[in-house]
Image 1 (spheres, helix red, strand yellow):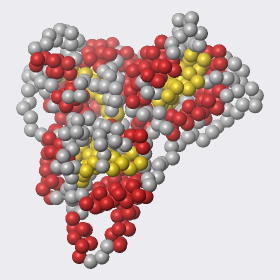
Image 2: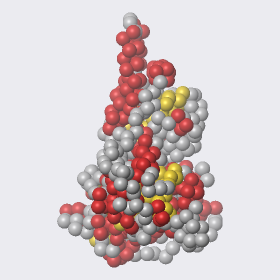
Image 3: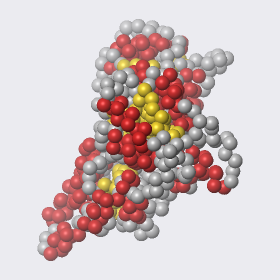
Length: 561
């Protein structure tokens, strides 16, 4: 057995059951070995798309996914998607063939490439150690939540594996939850006890049903309002005390209430400039607490008054246990007064305001639609009503992105795949493909700007080839809208960021899509017809949107640039 086959078998045995990529000569045998062992392979039309598909699949499935690429250009083509995954701490395994001779036209310093975007680099160095080294790469991806580049030199791939090297099944590695220190939990319990207006902000590290339930119980105990970062949107869907997303995407009411908090606890959340609006959501006297299972993440983006190193679910449950113990120790009128004060932020007036005004679609606005172009808010609200509630949404980057991210509801934390850590345009369609394969029980929706749609158009073929019943919504303003609205008001020329109209619906039909051009609300009848039909082909909506203003979140986004 050759190294390529042995490694492929071992990776599948270690739980790597989903692979994306573009196959060339250098990764041909390895990829086929994984498929023969049982892994599912999805061939993308570009390595960049394959990388983002793998990233999205890993996020939404909770498993380690793999990306398989050719040496040199196969890897460089994938680097933007790999950078997004690395910055998001996605457990992703990048399998890259490698040439080691600098005179080869395929030679690049692949280890340096990985290091430059924050990924971990590893290498298969011998036939004797190949399987062990491959399994260690899987372990690092799973247990350290890292994007790991495993370089596979061509010469080593072709070696014979010694007979005594086993490629038998091994247990897939799992990350052990970090138990918080008792003293830190006690300190957290004391801070919660003193607070009268607490807000919990849950992030990537809280994206699990167990963490959600533990946080909801702790928040109810202390009268806390609940919010999330964008990547965890939907975690508290259906909770009457949820403020939805904190930060630049927040509705006016959500921002107002967060600013009034006397305590903000970030649960598996970085509390960075996006989630805290460059710190403006934190009042001058607000106590800030951060809980994260990685001690190095505490206080990175802002000073915290208390940092707790621990798994989110375990820490929340330990805090509840501590509170129970403290209550049992209390006696008399003071204990009763403390019990009453636990309504915290959960007053009747605030509850009524949240019910009426916390969703963006409930915020009044002036509809600027014309007979030729539709207001993106009107479009998004209509689609929210038309599309099934059980959906998984992938969003591209650009001026438009806040509309689908916040106006389209999601059923839970697995309803929005938000690949925006690198803020690259062009990842949205591939994001939706990876998410769709991880959540085949839901209608996949790709929300793109026209710029991102044109960048990622090659993967329309992948959607059609896989038979995905996807809805692709293009918010088409014939421009790179973020730049138009950022630089236009200052009188800068915009010729470099505005384009002649493109019939993106016609492009989609060429790939085998059903397609509709939407200029008014009436045109969306075609979407209702598609949903009622067999959905035998994916649907693209080329929505001609008004471009009269920048999105509400755009000013916030550019404050950091």
